[in-house]
Length: 330
Ligand SMILES: NC(=O)c1ccc[n+]([C@@H]2O[C@H](COP(=O)([O-])OP(=O)(O)OC[C@H]3O[C@@H](n4cnc5c(N)ncnc54)[C@H](O)[C@@H]3O)[C@@H](O)[C@H]2O)c1
Image 1 (cartoon, rainbow, N blue to C red):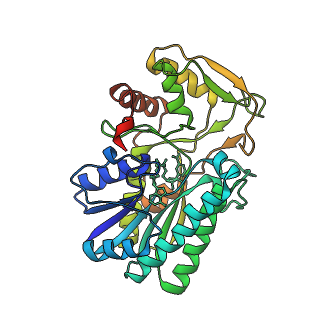
Image 2: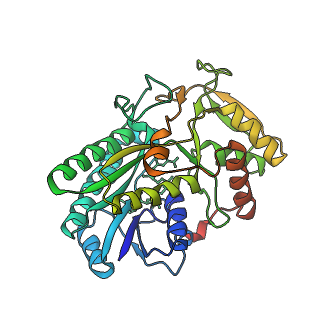
């Protein structure tokens, strides 16, 4: 029996496939390559290029591969784009997510690990943010994820679909094989490393008047291997009969934008110029996870909790792959 990894050609999904295969699991990838890279998926892994909302295709994959569970990563994930083009987010993330879950249920599948986000909380009222924090997203991206969380709860109650919704903070870092290559790139660490590599003149720092020690926004960074390891634990937890859960994934420690830049200067030994810009709408000052639940419930233990190690792995991948997966790799 196989695990369906949607969005397996993307940043987090490609590392998931690498780790599941190393563990000896059977994996099938479904990705439309709108934002991912064919070269990020090993040619030996069954790969279907298509939409997660294509019910017939999902039914065919379920028949051909006897699916036992799904890890659902496929989504658009740019906060700013979701504000200017909300229809794309509700159609791609929500409507297609509803179709996918319907097709999986119809095929008899009852186990899902879902990629959620700290954006489901909105402006934090308590930091570190616990899972029971009120949820009122500040952008359509966060709403598209929160609405799928509510759907999963209803499907559990009505149809017995068991799920773990993992609310990621900021994923970063790389394995030697797989790293971060988004176009355009909106994440801080790859943009800082692009400057270190001489691909960009400076990195923009959005907001320097936040109520934080150095005035720049504070975020909780989690290594991609630690993040994906939590998915394997969540899957095993569901296989053992665990109840549906919502779980934060972060390290519980915040770093400001300027601390990230300073750490990257140390790791790379390169000059990294910054340019101060106004705050971006909807960017909270502090996003730091209360991260105990993943440890207590899943037995999760991060291997790379230090920012320096996270940046070092990203830098090693970026130096070995200066073009990322390459323009021709799609
Ligand atoms: N990167 C982060 O820091 C972060 C933080 C919180 C949550 N997340 C969530 O994690 C997931 C993966 O994020 P990522 O950074 O790897 O993004 P990514 O863009 O690198 O990967 C997403 C993949 O999904 C595919 N895809 C998108 N819509 C699809 C559709 N309708 N049908 C089939 N394939 C589709 C894309 O082609 C891409 O390969 C997303 O759901 C995102 O919302 C990411």
